Length: 167
Ligand code: MG
Ligand code: FE
Image (cartoon, rainbow, N blue to C red; front, side, top):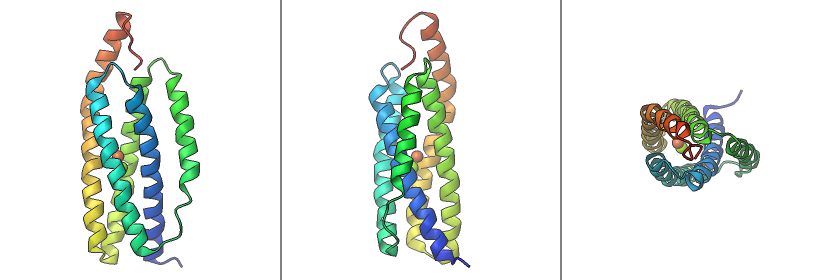
């Protein structure tokens, strides 16, 4: 039987790896977006938050002295591959915003699980850190939900007028 603490450590490492993927994805988007300043600004803001989140998770992991963080490599590779296929799409701004929205929902699910496990462990420090990260993920997902509508309309309008629309 695996103990609660072991599950928690594994889920924490998974979350750390996911934040690494997120940094790769957001960095590439921030660099490529040209015609959508609102999206670019929000992506840059969440990139800074995400780098901080990863450091907070590193702190929790080092405190628990878990196994070394080696599981991030495969994740980075698959994110890079996604990034490249996204660039080939004529609607990369739309596909990118959708991918980020989906990614945020995955993060929300993973922090929900981690918060339950931290509560079971009575780990108040982890609960505090994880709640702060959760707020940022919910805010980013909510922002994207609100802006996917106008983003789509601006994309369609630019494309219709033969303005550069894809990014
Ligand atoms: Mg995150
Ligand atoms: Fe996020």
